Amino acid sequence: MKFEDILEEINGFGPFQILIIILLCIPRIVLPCHFLLNNFIAAFPPHHCDISTLGDGGLLKNLTHEQRLTVSIPVREDGVPKSCEMFAEPQFQLLANGSISADLPTVQCQSGWVYDNSTFTSTLATEWDLVCDRKSLTKTTGTIFFVGVMMGGIAFGFLSDKYGRRNSLLASYIMSAVFGFSSAFANSYVLFAVLRFLTGVGLTGISIISIALSIEWVDTGHRSFIGVIGSLAWSAGNMLLAGFAFLVNDWRTLMMTVTAPLGVAVLTWWWIPESARWLLVNNKVERAHFYLDKCAKINKRQKLSSKFKQETLSEILEKQDTNYTYLHLIKTPKMRRLTLLTGTVWYGVSSAYYGISLNISGFGLNMHLTHFIYAAIEVPAKLMIYCFLNIIGRRKCQAGTLLLTGICIAINIFLPQGLWHMRAVVAILGKGLSEASFTAVFLYTTELYPTVVRQNSLGYTTFMSRLGASLAPLILLLEDVWTPLPQVIICSLAIISGLTVLLLPETLNVRLPETIDDIEKPRASEVSSHSVETAGVFLESMSTTDI
Image (tube, rainbow, N blue to C red):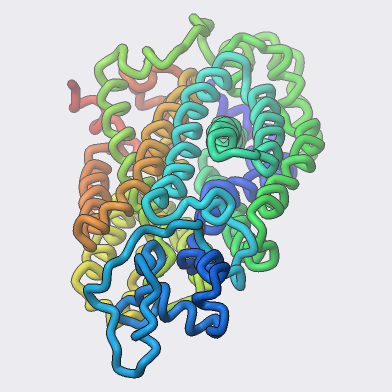
């Protein structure tokens, strides 16, 4: 007998499972607010060299502000003052009509910069003058954050499999809240970068534990529902971020605003159950029985009988070594293959998603509106992927969304900049598809790996994902080398990862594997009777391929 049989007796999809989704919604809303926060706190407002000191000697005393700018700051071809240069000496001849500033000697800004505060009263760029030759430091904060997310994936993947989902989730709540709030009070760039790194470490626990905990409590038929509908919290948080950033235009206040919901999440943690699957795998039968009885009570089903507890429950999973580590992901042939392929897919999925999400300029729209549209398109994309996941399967959905994302990026490479309406439509479509692929990959990966190393596997794949995310801001900087280069790289990664998916097995209607032996030596008896055909695809794929 398998765990799914127990869930069937106590109702594998009832009020108990819905309650879990609701309790995990608040912290999952916080995730996009931090993951995409750099779009706003690291924004570059219009700026030019500070020329206030030039008027002290009386040279510019009688000139208006516009005239001072004319004689002091060179302009670009579009008539906008240059951001990082000023004339070596005031050029009074430019006040005459028809005069041009080409070839006049310029120097770097000598007394700092003046910023346009009409959109943002304060950003990282204005706080620490991260502009001109230091502008890459704002992108670097995003990379540092995602490096923290990478490290958190490894740490919380191990901790969750070792000490349980529930305790590790509380640790991630507290860590994210403490360091998230502390970031708002950083008095130097270095301190801010360190705190953002630690915030990223904590937030990863919320990301990987919440999805696994949700799916481990539901039956086979509702896994896609839990995975997709639960992820709508990310979309809600993403849209809220655009609203928060519009209403709160100071970066420190914005940091505190998007972190505040974690205080509520800590309070709701008391009602979150431990994963009964994890408890059984770790031979904690009595504790598992407690939560299963609780699930039965809330779902209005009969509690498990004493005979069930003594004879059946303890035999659902064979007693075995519980000291599973990341090494178990590569110890056996089919696990090695699975680890290599899923790591490649996650890297491509993340690179595509963040490559698009962090590029919210260039389409002729306000950045807040662009971000909101990018977030809103995720909702229909997730509802669409939910339908297709159960119709054509996980593998085809995953591959299709990635390949179509790559095609959308490729189209925009060749569309002229003047056709910004069309470019915006294609970019929004690509954003929706990239989010659909991200939604599918969480569910798909959770179903591919066995319970004993499920969190370790999510820690590893999250590491690969955040590696892609951490490099995305740096890839975008390559537009200074060749404008289309970032899009060419992101497009290639999306297509390669989409093709890689085709080498993975299908998991539609296949029971979750519990042990590594279920991967290495799958048995037909473990497949639900109504999914023999789909399960055959799974077994054939896992048994005919080796490395």
